Image (cartoon, rainbow, N blue to C red; front, side, top):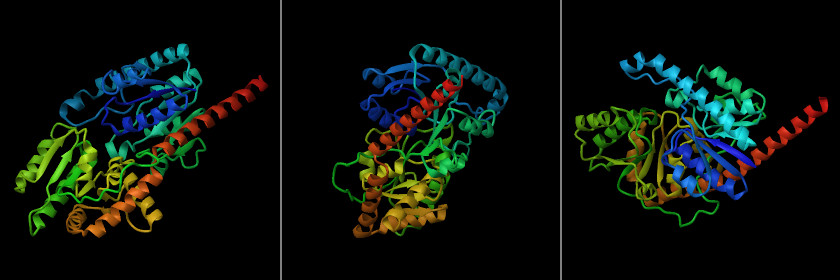
Length: 402
């Protein structure tokens, strides 16, 4: 089975890239011959080549309208849009020509905002999969080009399939009734996770992820300031681990910290390769994203025995409800606004070992049951087989009518 994968990013820290690598490992073990198409030669490219995987570098961009954040962005909007359309059209043609020579059974695009794989698949008459890992509009304020209706039409066209990472993502794209759409949760942990259940109750709060507006930094900082201001003793510090995205993000956070006299209480850790160790020793991880599609950080932290304090939205809410359904009670502390977040931070600080470990132990159990890497990969490989069976059946019927 030959599968062509299209990535939107080669960054190792990118959640979509992490999930792709989990799939790739199992797919190659199962006999899949992959080709990986990337927008640049950085990040994971050397690792892929070292494993003997065919890597094709093409110059393409997301199939969304350019970002508008400054006067310059508005002035350059039309040139940028035209440039983006030109690059993507050229890349789709290049991809189709490459795959005409090298053949592929399925084109699997790792996110919903890259469309050159869909266009090449149509030209080659091969099945295409959109792996929908984002809301696009509700989480990142992205607008599909030319519009969302056009994207939905692509999902419903012949030989088009989709994998949604949550039921809510599937509903958001109106694919619940589409027989060619499935829900497959991300794979976070091995089927049999190693190590004992950790319950360390560290002495700091943690945010892990890209530092950007979509991650709910405003509610995070307002909630933390309210918590720290209301403490009758020294508040636990807040550690921010992740890449900074945006020109003013760090400065905005520093301004809030300085205005409230908490300069010593908020620490930027940057991108870390030891994030699991940091999670293991945190009092709690905070998930404040306004609409996280799935949110890998929360189950990853739960697997490390770290308490989660999570916002009741999107894929985060779905994970919380999954846990409550399985365990009969909450597997994390929840909040809807900054005031509630402050209350949950105070509660996490004052928890007894018994209460803390009771929640984190059940949370870890849920992650191992629902988000196994083996189940994730097996579900997708099974979907590939169904797609190829559908394709063979359709081609057979068509040949008999000719």
